[in-house]
Length: 160
Image (cartoon, rainbow, N blue to C red; front, side, top):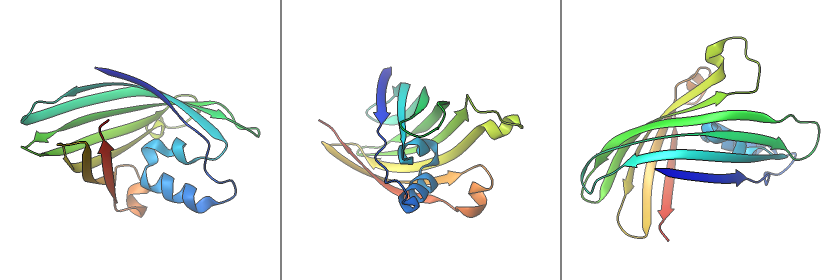
């Protein structure tokens, strides 16, 4: 079991919407990272069942608190969550993950509009101090799934 706390600092450029659009389009579950003038404080409770070889499983859940740093923005709260399963081979992990983001503080007319989900598939090297990987994300919510066929990404974990 792991508990972590962190913050996304408001470092996005103000008035330049290209980086914001690219960031939110490619990683909507964590869209808070790409907003200017917003400090996001988050918590995460996670469990990972991983053996040297064989089936792997995990889950996580936690809050995201968005705090405006200037202007007349409002405090907002979200909850993020995920379920992951996969298989660990000798040197590689194969994994699928269902991720979600739920709105807590905003008013939403239709309950299902309160949630956003995606499905991620990944392969990652799990030996050594540098662990590269590749993943592919499919958005499960319309109109996102109509406009973005998927997101391919690279990942590198560095073990200290």
